[in-house]
Length: 293
Ligand SMILES: [Ca+2]
Ligand SMILES: [Ca+2]
Ligand SMILES: [Ca+2]
Ligand SMILES: [Ca+2]
Image (cartoon, rainbow, N blue to C red; front, side):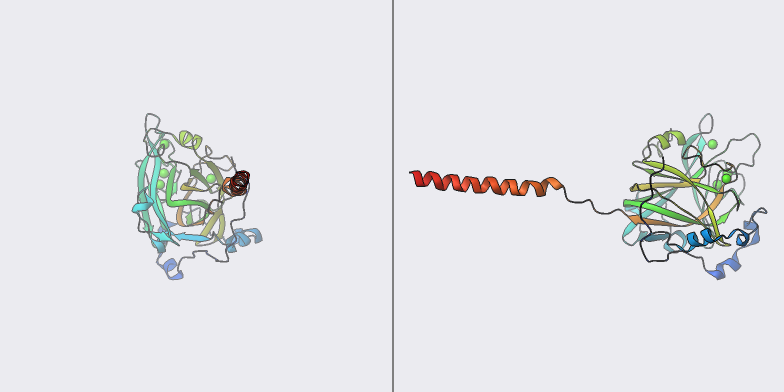
């Protein structure tokens, strides 16, 4: 279920976390898949608008800000504008049908390419396996869907993500979920379908090309939560068309907005005049009785 968009791109902070140009020189071509032909021909005006808009009020740049592995943000020293964040990796690589979600390895690929995930069934260190992917090159095996979990120490709305590398520059999708609880995710006994069934919201989005070193997806989920999954396209989260099995990317940054404080309970304001009225009535009653005596 996808909820209506809320205005979340209000901050003036142009937070596109472009990676340093010098790092591009350090990037070897071996990281790029042969079907990656660059993005310049795909730049449309709408894409440019997307690319020039803010990713969110706050930007968590995984490379610059650092990553602390784990599911408990209170144990993390990574803080973005006062919000502590930890990151962990998950994939469906366990069980009779290889469909139960268990932990995987969060993989720092480089200061340039950001982070990927290697699951228990990964085939080689090289692309696309060390990316966050649903690609399977082993005949007879089943597809595994890699996800990262971002744990925040307070409720946030994740507004988008940017990626440094795509396996396919024409058919890449990302799936997202806001979770109330991570007990199902960490139980070792649930499928992605089980986890989706208990999620606050799940959705999928196309990843747009911005330029050679930046690709991104904006999310329109209005729910706020401490726990957010971002991973390789899985139609269980939402089917938006496109092909499954060619989605692989490296995560470089995430945009998020902090949830507004809850408004004060209206009952407290309403009860004040009533209480004052009763108090005054009591005073007048006492005065009247004294006058009668
Ligand atoms: Ca992988
Ligand atoms: Ca894989
Ligand atoms: Ca699997
Ligand atoms: Ca795809």
